[in-house]
Image 1 (spheres, rainbow, N blue to C red):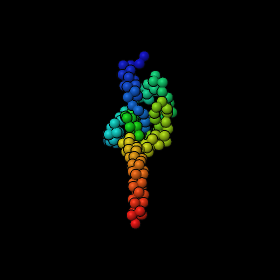
Image 2 (image 1 turned 120 degrees about the horizontal axis):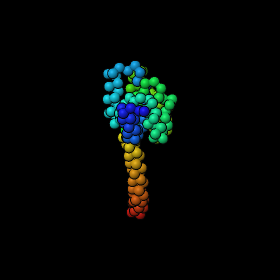
Image 3 (image 1 turned 90 degrees about the vertical axis):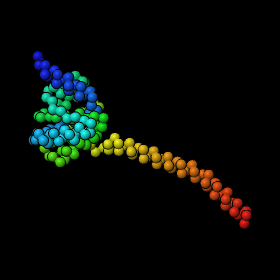
Length: 172
């Protein structure tokens, strides 16, 4: 019979899974408490959270949520990064920290009901942030609008130049 603390932790895991856009699984073995606190701070700045849960409880929560159970990732000490609205920013924060600290290892993750490998998480980390994508889209729209305005303006001005040339020829 499961104890009360495990039931409560299972409920917390389910709530975290429901509230996040993706989950990144990392191996934090070898990190000092200060390094873990620094990593959590960096992750919090992206609107995400990092928590440590028992692997068996995460397995149960995923199974109850009809998600892939990530059995191959849930080996050894694992920390779970629950990404907020900008999943790329959370992945980028984890990847950048892992690049600077060789002790942190990205194991993989879960996004949109699909299990991801460490390479998939790193690929997501290389995507531009939501703000950068919005700026790129706005720039593309502005470029199209500017081109359309130049084209539309070019027809009457070309016609006006042609009429002016005809008028100049007739006057001469």
